[in-house]
Each structure stands twice: as structure tokens, then as C-alpha cells.
Length: 588
Image (tube, rainbow, N blue to C red):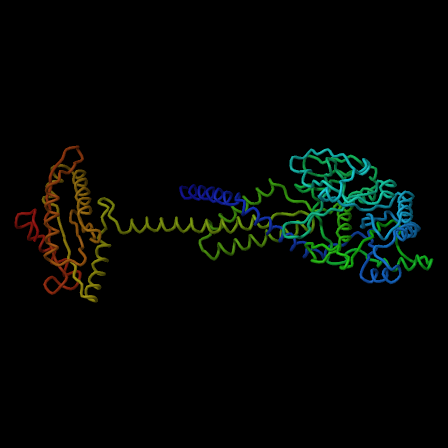
């Protein structure tokens, strides 16, 4: 029972130590970095099991299209009138949405007529969307424009966890007025990268001069889900953005953590030059654009809209935007496990690890059990992301496990060592006097004889006996006799050298092995002990005091007293007898 209580105390101590370590700021940054890497690995492994939504198509300005544009239009960017013609052409297929992942800002290559033509196309077709970008440009270089109210959104945030102030901007690279004046289908395309430069999530809303502006992809998803008139948004107490009956999980910074669909061109990609050819030749192409979301954006590496994502180092920005929309309409955004779940899992793993270590006898068994536990947990986190889009922590729990393993092993073997010391003491110590027992004495005598024979060392032996001890017991009782024997033993231990070995030989007889001691020196030590004992008053069981004396026999390894343990003991014993015969309280 006591051992179980001690194990429980040690487990609580382990939990306290581990939690203290994990509060360190440097560790928190390290754990976050490593946890992001585990997310990347899981996402990369899962790409083969996921398919993007077939209703999203990308008209890609790829390398071939870029070359075609330069050859046939003689400039980049294209004239705004070309995009206006492209909108008209695509609308003939009755698409769900036409989305430009392009920013129509002021350009030297475009004239006002082209801009007006494009603005008219946006005004005519209510399903056409385009992008804008917020920044923190110095207002001495660019004055911050005032954006119309129709582009902003109202948000009711009921979550203490979600911080809507994470993305604040003081400036904006505004697009051309003909578009702004014609439509409210304008959204932001700002992205957020982690410290390692990898894009894993995207903002849902961005703060510009005290107002919130939705991400472009959020507007596209609202249109697809038939909530495009929604201007007010609610974030519930659990940190979910409510869109109709959908609950979109937001991370602490109001990010949406993206669930990636694959490497490279995950969505159906159609090079835009093919559509431009059809327009120029007045040819109705056989494109399946009906009721589809058509994203128009650059995939050519030379156009510099390339991101690094968990599944690919070279990922076109338009693919990122399409992934964002795909996540929203399919409700496949990644959700992080809650703080409470993380604490529960960590505590469970700590308890299981400690249980394996303390419950299993072998070290190898403990290691195998913990490795099995870690393996099962890794599979669990993989399956959780695969089937439920849940991001369960890996780094903290695994480090918890191995720190617990190390601490528990140290504690276990410290307890074993203490238990061994206790058992060893019980096996070698006399219970009454707390001197070494007779068995230990015999083992030490054998060892000293062997060492003396091998290295030509000398050692001596004292055997002493309390004088008239039987009569003492008869007069004062055995309890007083035991008390005196215990006190004499204490005085002997206190007054010999630390290297000397004091043992209870039997009854009231005590033996002392004196290493590296010749006969004459041994006699001096024996006489000193006789004097000390005879000068002391010893407490009796009845509260009274009494004096006792001892007689001591001395022998030394060598030719005179013998070179084996039995001869040396016999010689000391005979000299003890002579001391008693010659008056006691003396050395012989």
C-alpha cells in the first residue's frame, strides 16, 4: 500500500515538473515550430486520399498563356477591355461565379475607356468578383484611401479565444474606381505566413481603419452557399464562424486553417490562352463552365504569385485562394483540438507512461510499451485529421511521454536502489545493536585474509565481551541487558576508525576488524576502547544507570596467529578468555 502511495506521489511530481518545463517561452516557440511541421507531414500524407471540389475551375495564366499574351497582345498586364470580353464570353456558359485573383490597380498600359468597359462588365454581371490587398505602406508615399461602406462587414464576436485584432492594416492598394463604383463583389486576398515562411492558414477578416473586410474567398463561398447577401457575421462562443447551418472553425488569430488537397495543380486547370483563342476566333469552345466557380489567376512562376504551403514549395496563389473556398463550401477546414482535450490527452499519456514504467518489471518491456503507446497515438492523430479534419497535437504529448519515461525510470530505479539498500542492511545488520551481523563478519574475514595473502597486508581482529553480563542480566533484567549492549555497541562504533568493521559476533560478544593494523597498534586501540567503556555510565531499562567493563582479545594475520580466518578468530577468542581469567576489564 505504501509503495502505491509513493508511486502516486511521484507521478504527481512528474506532472508538475513537466508542466513547469512546458511553460518556458523558448520551449513554446520550439513546440509551435515543430507542431507545424507535424501538420505539414500529415497533410502531405493525406493528399492522396482527398479530392478537390469539381465545381471549382482555374483559368490559369500559366507559362504557355503568358507567352501567348506577349505574342498576341504585345503587353502584360492585359488591357482591361480583354478582361471585359473574357467576362462576357464566360457568362455565356452560365457559371456560378467568375473570380479574378488579380488586382486591377492603376496601370500605364491601360486607358480610361478600357477601365470603364471592365467596370461596366462588373456592373452588368452580379456574379463577378475581384481582389484587393491591404498593407501598411507609408502614407507619405501613398495616401490611405477611404473604402466604401458596402465592402465592409459587421461582426459579432462571442468568443474569448478568437482575436479579431490580429490583422490590422493602415493602408490599401485600391483598385480602379470604375470597378469600386460598380460592385460590392470585392474581397481581400491577404495571406498569413508562419515564421518559417509556410502558408498554412488565411485570415477570415481584416481590420482596416477600424472596419472589418472579408476575405475574397469568404465572399465566393457565401455566393456558392446562397448566403451572398450576408453582411453581418456571428462568431459563437466556441470560436466558430456561423454561415447558415455551417460552423467554420477559426483559429485564435481569426484564421481559417486550410485543408490542402494536393501538390501542384489540384483543381482542374485550363490555360487561359485556350479561352482567349476561342474569343478571338469567335468559336464557342466545349468548356464545362456551367454553374462552376471560375478562378482566374497566375500560375506562371515568372509572374511571382507563388507561395510555399505544407504540401508544395511552389504553390500558385490562385490555387491557395481556390483551396480556401473549397474548404468553406465543403466544411473541411481544419479544427484544432480544444485546450481541455489537449490537457486530458497529455495527462492520460503521462499516467499510461508512468503506469508502464512502474507496472512492468523489465526495462525493455517499459520501452516497448511506451513505443507502442506513441505509435498508437501517432496513428490516432493521423486518422483524426483524415476522417474528422481535426488537428490533434503531437509534439507536446510525445515530449511529455518521453520526459515522463525518463523521470519515471530515474524514480523507479532510485526507489529500487533504496529498497535494495534497505534489504541489504537487513541482511547484514544485527537488529538490536545495529552492528554488522555474524554472517557479514565471516564474509569480511574471508575477504581480508585473501587480500592479505595477495598483497602482503596486515590486519588485526578484536573480540570483546561485556564482563559479568549473565550476572548483569540476572540482576537488572534482560531489557536492561539489551539496553546496555546497544549502548556499548554505539560507543564502539563512535570511537573506532571509519575503516574499522564492528560486528556482533554472538550474544554479548562483539568483533572488530582493524584493516592495515599491526598487533601493537591493535592493542593500543583495544586498551583505548576498554578505558572508554569503563568510564561511561549506561542507562538501564528502569531509568537507573550502571557501569560495565569489557575484556578484549587481540589477534593479527600472520605466522603467529594464523593465515586463515578460523585460526585468527580462534587466537583472538583464546586471548579474550585469558583476559577474563586474568581479572577482566583488560586486553590480552
